[in-house]
Image 1: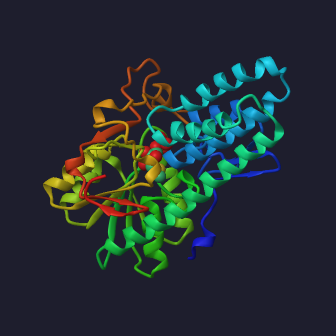
Image 2: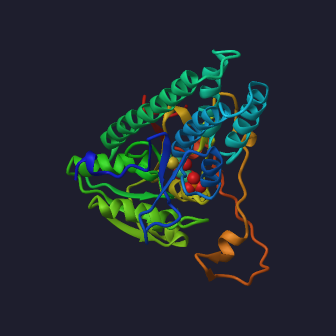
Length: 339
Ligand code: MRU
């Protein structure tokens, strides 16, 4: 394989944001193409586009679309429309800091042009969103290189959720490390956890890695402890949605128990994340908002009933892994014991 053959999850073309509809994979590779920021907000909420860097990039383009649409309004109505729409985008999903970070970066461009909402400003916003996408691509590549440097000779890696091209603007974070090992000819053996709520691991990670010729095995989520204790993996690498100053990390539900089992069995547990996922404004995981998903999402999966319709469900999208359980953070700026 080579890096160029890895799929692109989103791009901006002909004044539209084009995203792979990840709810349809692996059965169908379909795209959503829109110039309506409301469709982007809905796509973020429904996990059509997902992954912390992925929703940050989509959110940035959504801000450009808002400003283009505001030009159809009278000048008195523009500011209010923009403020309301930016709030909607920022709050579409609360846990990944990348989304609000990207919206604030674009807001700063708007505020640097007070009183002038013009087509030129919309163009500047699009260029800023392009920069966020390009920077994310570069950060993924650097994470991949740093992570591949520290992998053992015969890497057997457990990963969780989907942290690949589908979750970012580039080759991914934890999956970026795996792709880089594959390109270096290290033939990593990968176990991908199924992942709730929407089976992001089995539907997306297995699809992505198999497409790239990586040796991937789908891991029943409940079997992760058994796999780690059996000595069949020599490292665990996951992504992150938000990392506090003390290293506490929010990531896909099921990450925390993996870290606990790794500690018990002395297996390295790495978090791979770009600089945009580190939240300097909070000290610890206690300050992180954790999204709860709907009951329907797990009671009914793709039309099939998996539990009685009225079942009470507890479905947080993320959990928090204490910083002390994390061996190191693989970032675009190097490998760090603490943020
Ligand atoms: O709910 P999701 O699918 O958006 O959750 C994604 C994750 O938890 C990823 O591990 C994280 O966003 C990092 S993606 C590079």
